[in-house]
Length: 381
Image (tube, rainbow, N blue to C red; front, side):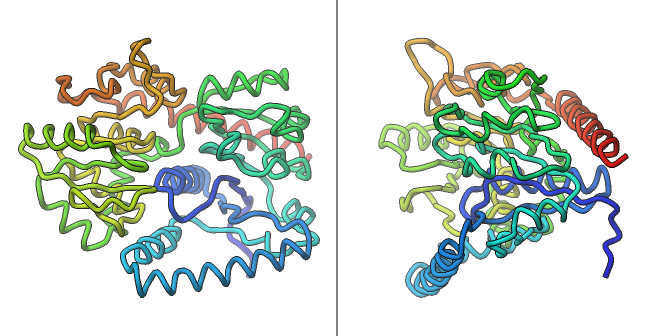
């Protein structure tokens, strides 16, 4: 059956079933592109198997993963529920499984899509990035752009991403999420490099709220009836941090609800089986947010929530954040730095509007992709 869409867009990004921010930025970009331009949009899912050896290895890992999830369902049921929520919530996007064809994936993928969008999240990071071969898209001769691509605080260089550095000039347009990544790109190309927002900002508060109401679990909705302080923490908290959060909750007369990533700590009403849309729903209905996460901060801003953002690379001696992502948020939204001082005793303003700036970001992204389509049209003439 022939698709009703005249053009097809493939988004290349980090893909996993564990990271809220990774999934939600992906949903935001795909939904924005589909709603704005009415093209078919898919996300490339998984890694390319380079040979029959990798192809077999992938399926062995898949079977081991299924076995692991079966054991989790028996012994750690809540974690398995969380895994399946991530899988279920991926229905917000369409996925491309072309990587299952190991010997001719480059030719097939090149002829199956009209536009390739590399972004967003820490795709080009030394610590978390995707493989160099995929990041470079050297095998694509269609229209290809990056959008809000990020290297986080450890962006790529020629020693870690030689193919990407060599092929950046072949990208039709380039866009980064932060100044640090933009500077890394500019070392290897003379092309203009734009700065664009994280794709989570491409959907408005009402759009995210509608998606959360549609997909959030009954448990999340039941929790949201309470008055609570939502804590989203990556890895373990120190005793000092835990005590500070508890004192803050007591001062605000709020119950603590905690979402964790990379931690087995079950204290303070930890919601283990939280899925991506549960995450949004709980931020939307919270009274206050404490987050050690870039995207926890992003959604606190979108929903106009008072928040503390615990900055893991804050240097007290310098008095400012050293996180390129946080610095960009502070600049874009003129945020008071006291929200990022790692000091929960600092008094915060109730909040400040971001809608005007967010709409400017959406308009900038829209204009950027219009340029992409113009380039694509000229290529086919």
